[in-house]
Length: 340
Image (cartoon, rainbow, N blue to C red; front, top):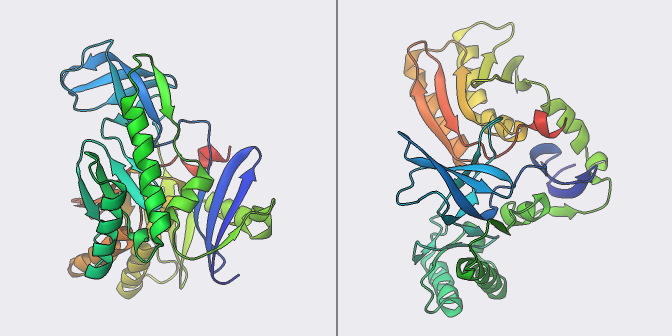
């Protein structure tokens, strides 16, 4: 199957969405029982953590942890938003910096000003978008980010998106109740697919779409650690309790040229491999042997690959043993947990 397709389906009673590009699974979203990122709570301050500058909070979905908080006393209500998934046995990660995100617009209470994605470079288009924003939010103190998907989009669609997100933000901020409460649910897979997979695509909504379009077969492959890199080389992605170990294997060819080629292929394949498996945290790459002079080229390719990925990832650097380290946001649950 050539081209780009978005398949909206269910796995059992759970909502799910898949992005297929030229017959290959590029991304997948499967709902879970865990609180969704983006969920907004009115939480209650519970107890501070000395030495970390943070505080545990009580929410309707259990304990949450807020970093770098000052002036908050136990028992006080506070608005927070879920930023990711909790590690096993740990509290939900939350932030005070609320974001109300949709396909075209992100409303940012507490961060005033109108900003346009840097990917939109045409000055006439930027002026058009500023005019739309000022028409919808003439005197609003809230901030606004217009996403790259706004480029060339219809005026009515952008204006409606801005208005809906601004109304949601205003409603939540105006709620003066003091009780612990879920104020807004995070987006599910179908809405996330509409929101974030914005490139032109065929949309399939027929029941059983995952089976008909090969998504289920692709998921079975992704459950394993192996990622083919071509010419007999392999990438192995294996999560442990402490970190995610990534090993590059050149197969039967042990030459330096094969090592360099496999490492460059790893740099291109790694974002997709981690994204599909839902892996984050500390990631350590055990690369094939290559001269130190080629490390900069490897870093350049790796940086370009992660630039196109929407999950925050920091390239930390080389260790004394020659491993390369990354730190990746835990934006998803591991696929192995979701499919159990």
